[in-house]
Each structure stands twice: as structure tokens, then as C-alpha cells.
Length: 297
Image 1 (cartoon, rainbow, N blue to C red):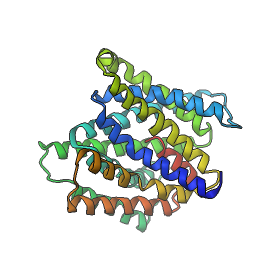
Image 2: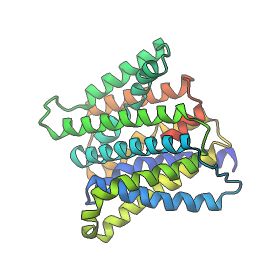
Image 3: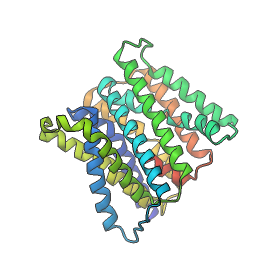
């Protein structure tokens, strides 16, 4: 893979991540069924791509690795469920921008959990995200669907941040694709009891959207990011990943006529700037690890 094709693969991966909310909205199923199906299809897709890739290494899991993957899977399940609940309630744009708050949570939680000093530029990052979320919120009426959906999306960002920090604490022990497979398997098992009663009622078209979520937005996107990191600098990859909200909002605008207001666009711009800044700051986790964590979305 040349640097040019790797950069193209990164943008395709970011576009696929941006499609996450779109496919979730298209699928007329509950959040639990969508997440169960996405995780199941993702396990199959990741196993297939790992079999095709040369030099794929598998590590024998120690008890510590099993515990870490179980916790990561539970956090990933909560992250995905809350994100798709937000999509169903408030739409793709608000869900995507609310989730994009995760860098601010990561800065705060790193300081609390790892007892690291929060730097001035990190405080600015938190302020940018906070102002962006205020602008994105159409109103502060808790009874409104937009506000409720944004709260679910912010919860999704918080859970994703916890997932990233858990992976940071156990980084390097399990290869990325193997970890992603096991985490998705845990997600599928966790959601099976909630999804099972409604599986027979899911339409064939909805299974198509859910399958695309698992194969494209998880398996293919994750594999593209892993492959491109062998050629492209991880910080470049992180900046490209910051385009995910742009792709998601644009597609929602075109497909669902979710026309963003000027205030929402300004808020989204601040959040995207914060994501780019956070990817350039050189915080504690290695850049490649941060990008691979992002692929969990």
C-alpha cells in the first residue's frame, strides 16, 4: 500500500464511520437489535479479513486479557446502544455531534484516573467541546426529543471515552483485530437476551442495513485503518478520522433532510476543531492506539 492509497483508504474508513448513524436510522429496529446484529456481522467480517491478511498474529489470552476484553465489550455495548437510541430520538446529526464530545471526557478522566496534570491546551479543548454542545442543543427543554437525544449521545461519548481509557491501561497486550473480534463477540452475547424476542419480526431490508453496519462500518473500516497505519502517520490518521462528523451530518442532510441550523453548524465546527486539536496534542496514549480505539465506533 502506497502513502496515496493509504490516505484514500483512511478517508473511505472515515466515510464508513460516518455512515454508522445513517444505517442505524434506516434500520427500523430497536437499538438492542441493531447493536446485536452489528456485532454479530462484525465478528464474521473481522475473522474473514484477518484470514485474508498476511502476517496476522493471534495471542493466547491470559486471564487478565479475558477480563479486559469483557469490560471493553460491556463498555462498547453501552456506547453503541446509547448512540443508536440517540439516532432514533434526535437524528443522525445530533447523535454524531454529541458522541464527538468524547475527547473532552478523555482529557478529564485521564486526569482523574491516571492522576495526570491537565494542561492549558487540554482545558481549551474541553471548553471548545462544551461551547459546541451548547450551540448544538436547539433548546434546554428536557422534554424535547432533541435534548433527550443529545443527552443519550453525550452518554455514548462518555462510554466511548471509558472504553478508550480501559484499552489504554491494557494497551499492546492483544493485537487490534483480535481484540476487536472478542469485544464484538461480548457485545453480541450481552445484547442477545434483549434482542432475541424481536428478531423474528425484523424485515429483510433491515437486516441488510444492520449487516452493512457490521461489515462496512466495523469490519471493513477497522481493517482499513489498521492497514493504513503501516504507511500513514497515526496523527494524520487521527485528523482524517475527525472528518467523521462531517461525513455523517452531510449524509443525513442529503438522505433524511436533517438540515442543520447555523447555530448547529457553528457548534459542530467547534467540536471538530477540538477533535483535530486533541489528535495533535500528543497526549499520553500512543497516537496509533488512539486511532485504533476510534475504530470501535
